[in-house]
Amino acid sequence: MKLDAMGDLQRSHTCGELRKGDVGKSVVLMGWVHRRRNLGGLLFIDLRDRYGLTQIVFRPDADEAIFERGGHLGAEFVVGVTGEVVERPAGTTNPELPTGEIDVHVSDLKVLNASLTPPFVLEEPIKASDELRLEYRYLDLRRPHMQRLIEARHKAAAATRTYLNGAGFLEIETPMLAKKTPEGARDFIVPSRMHPGKVYALPQSPQLYKQILMVAGCDRYYQIARCLRDEDLRADRQPEHTQIDTEMSFVTEDEIFEVAEGLMVEIWRAVRGDEIETPFPRLTYGEAMERYGSDKPDTRFGTEIVDLTDLLGGTDFNVFRSVIESGGAVKCLNAAGCGGWSRSEIDKKEELAKKWGAKGLAWTKVDGGALAGGIGKFFSDDERAAVIERAAAADGDLLLFVAHDRKKASRILGKLRLVLRDELDLVQPGVFNFVWITEFPLFAWNEESEGWEAEHHMFSMPRAQDLDLLESDPGKVLGQLYDLVVNGFEIASGSIRIHRRDIQERVMAVVGMSKEDAERKFGFLLKALDYGAPPHGGLAHGGLAPGLDRIVMLLMDEDSIRDTIAFPKTYRGLSLMDGSPSEAEPAVLKELGIELVKPPDDDVPGQSSG
Image 1 (tube, one colour):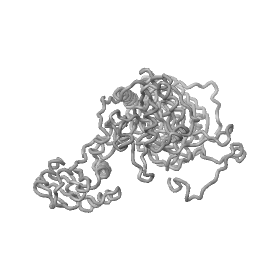
Image 2 (cartoon, rainbow, N blue to C red):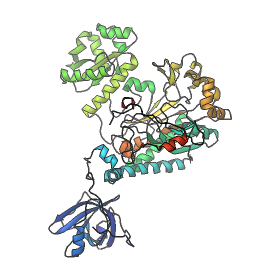
Image 3 (cartoon, rainbow, N blue to C red):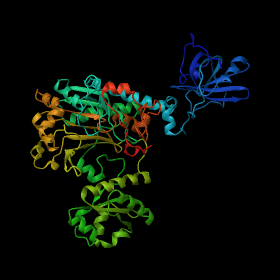
Image 4 (cartoon, rainbow, N blue to C red):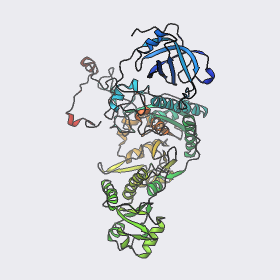
């Protein structure tokens, strides 16, 4: 087909703009051929652009040559049309389409570019494989659903800038080529040509630089920051992601929470038009683990974990008594209304519990105000009554028990709680429950290395009352640490930072870092702390989690962050569209003084993942 030059043709309206009030106007539309239908000698084409669809009509009695050219248009051809806006005949309107009351009758057609037959149909729901979509990402992104995601991400970023600018923050960029420092994940490394044998690291986060900015007196900083981590991937993780990064001087946790909550209000309002209530509830880490078995609790539904340890210390059920006597705990979930489950269904839940580390999953049902079946027969009458009351159980409920050490029992039941959520449809769509998790342990014991490591990172300030425990009992030290969780997803993580060198060196010593190592790896930060560093703290809507990407995922009810990113990678870190990562020319490697050695396939991380 002959292609036309655009010439002086100028678009007058978008494909989502025209309404009944525009009838009679002469307009120029430009876009892609989305769908075509030839009905009764009339040719109907849905013309699509980012803004929507408009039905355009070719009539042979108006211009036979234009009608014939229109008949040769294929899917995804780029065209410009001139025509008159006409009201659709009665009974042919489309209430599902904003432009559904009008057509544009075409008087002139310019074919601006042709298209090969697309490898998949741009429809909803998409039927193409993920691999094909990523290979032809420029086609996938044309789909209205993907356009909505891109627009939602833009709105979230714009709302962030507007809100933080209004709150006195300065947007400041931090380096992409940085010093390699241990931050908990693998770095992407960039060899330096000008300094042979040395490397830059791409930033896992702006953590150290934003602290330096506080030392520099910037007081309130933010950045919509790109963060890169060489980690194995999953549905909510990509090698490069974006976090909304903030830091403030002379602040308390309450002030940080207030700013963060205001930001969430603005983002939810801008993207969804929803009004969310503040202040958000708060739970300590200990409370979250006891009640929900997770530091990322989904609080949209009940089914909380119940601790029965104090009620069953003298029980005749030997399995429970022996666990309690050894310092463990007995906990349960009330699966409300599940008393009719078959034994095979309960066995499936036990298999899951064992997979997560349980020795078994005990059960009993409530019938006629008493426990029936399972382990209920081993309890005394007083124990049965106490268990029913503590679990708030009623007839038809199923009680599921785990006996283990306290933390393990909670984690197992926490996972089982989410299985019940999904199988029993315990949450309503469109509901967003925010909760702050506070007072995390500052350190976690690593069984493999037999040493302490930072729970979040080593720059978080211990609670003042726990400073004396740093050397004597690190496991009891709680940090001024906090996460913001919504619907079971962590969307932000932060802390009050250490602003004194002596405390920072003590924390580094707990995690096994000598003064020499600390100086070598973090000397620039320690030096800055010596020059009047103010108390400061902040929040990354990201941190260890992909912040902006995950926020958009939740806002738009997506299952993965991948479609919230314009050009994501596969689970193996590949970009199928442009073929990265790719091989480097030998001359380039020689100039950098490096040699790349490909390991056997068995040793390649993620080789078997999709």
